[in-house]
Length: 132
Image (cartoon, rainbow, N blue to C red):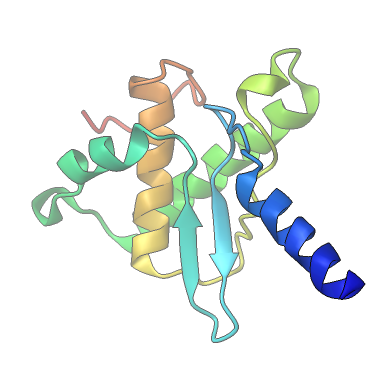
């Protein structure tokens, strides 16, 4: 009976506690057991913005997005560890340049950086791509 009560209290506390999410919390690349990837972006405005920018007519190659993502992630992670405003960037992004990510992950991550630069107005790369 004590165990049931304890489990109930733990479940209740877990369900009622609210987590506050930092607006600029880093996106996460989640890996499922079957090597499927998912990019999770915590900024609430990103998904609706991304839906308006996700056009197949404007899509570039996976290699294009990959090469820019390497530069963006490197700069992002550098700022997380060295910037006096590191709270803007959240935590490092676990992006491995030698990993082969699907097109959707490369594309969405690239557009996350575009969102950061153009919507949040946080410049990341001096000579970034001319997208818009």
